[in-house]
Picture 1 (cartoon, one colour):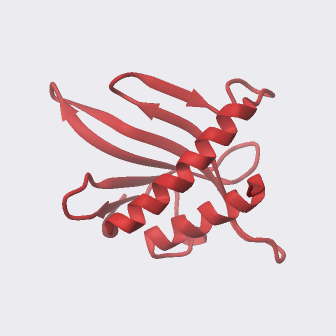
Picture 2 (tube, one colour; picture 1 turned 30 degrees about the vertical axis):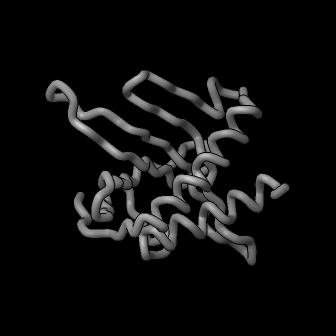
Length: 145
């Protein structure tokens, strides 16, 4: 079984491969759209830095329209730590949101608290999702502010 740190390293590399650029180049307020024929687009938004750690937080989401509303299927937030002093970059899942049926999970449900089972499940799901997105052929097509 892989250690959590190894999984975070893999997920960091998978994100860089998927976006086709170093994650250290991402800037707050910028969104990326990735496409693969026959699949839902993936929207990656760079959110403001995480206050406690200074890490970058990304939102990764597929969206569909129902009744005129945009619905996530799913959306995850991911905290990204760039490589430093010989250490590899890390990507850690923070939340999972699905609109229909409504599902929400958080690794850190409140300040100072962690949900270990949710942490394992979301980070494993993130790894699988990133692998699937790459296999489906998702490629960046647009950047917007």
